Length: 243
Image 1: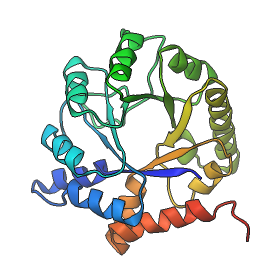
Image 2 (image 1 turned 30 degrees about the vertical axis):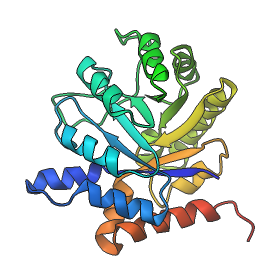
Image 3 (image 1 turned 90 degrees about the vertical axis):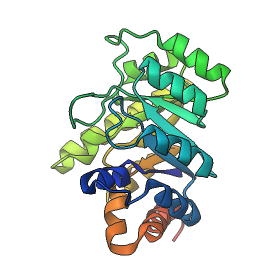
């Protein structure tokens, strides 16, 4: 059965908008885990715009499941991650001076020795992952760089406006996931996932972990954070199950 990792970044975004201490990502972590979440994800940007280093240390002590930290491969952040020692680290390409969402790693263009970086984290007992676009060649690049898993960016599928567009994007995700499995990599999926579109991804049968943030936080405004997590877990546990 696929696992659910709850991203708490959207809670920090709301806190930033208000400019106060609330809502607190730490409270979201407690509620998510009580509801049955299998892990907690968070992203540390180089500009520390939403989640701050203080949050990272607090959440590390608070999380009882798995802590998944996302960050760009910047020396200062890599050192912080090695100090905090999360369960896993996902490397992303960020855009330090804008609100543009993070994008996948381009192994052909990135001036970074990812093999050396993954070796450092592997030596510290930390699972390494790369956010990637759903392309077989990029999956192979992640495997060559020493990754343990890949986080497939599903944004194109999530933003599709027609059935044909959605099916084409879903097929790309499926092919990338199959390549990852053949390469011995774990497969995660994230990027615009919702209560309505996650079933199609679950039915592929080759994604072992889903990372969801905005959809849960948005639903939580109506039903509460723990119930929002429970509702998504119910969908995940019943999709494809015998009726």
